[in-house]
Amino acid sequence: MLTEELLTLAAAAGAAVATAAGTDAWEELRTRLGGWFGRGDARLEESVLAELDSSAERLLEAGTPNGNELERYGAAWRDRVAATLEQLDGPDREYAARELRRLVTGETAPAPAPGGGQNVRGDIRVHAEQGSLAAALINGNVTFSPPPPPVRSEG
Image 1: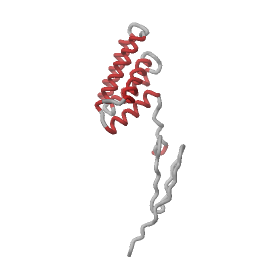
Image 2: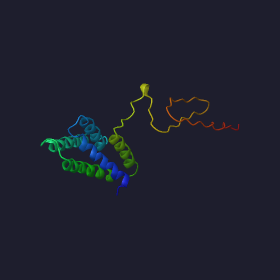
Image 3: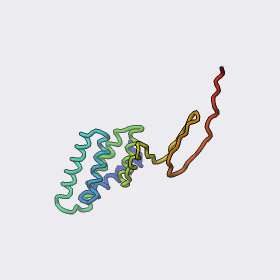
Image 4: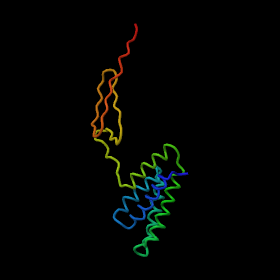
């Protein structure tokens, strides 16, 4: 059973699909949602993209949909998202929820760092040992702690 937060998130995703259908925002949303459903499975992603396209065509075939039509369309995608979340558990569900939240809010993933570095949104720990130096370019809070005392070998 999904938490209230996840049900609300699924409803927001359904509403986003209904709102974006037939607009300039559609292409980006359908691509990102297809990727979310596919979770790395290209065939599943293609299947979802085809379903998104055909369902949007049906919604828009008679012209601008009315409020009830948009609500039914959004509810169908809400249910599809909720069913997908229900199939996941533990860390997979948490990750999917985080990605869905980013998708619904329009937040994009940070661009890859140049030179093979990593972009991190949130906390990061940088640790150096045995006299080495560690560094990071930080845009946020930084916490330093002293290094542990050296370990002396008895010889």
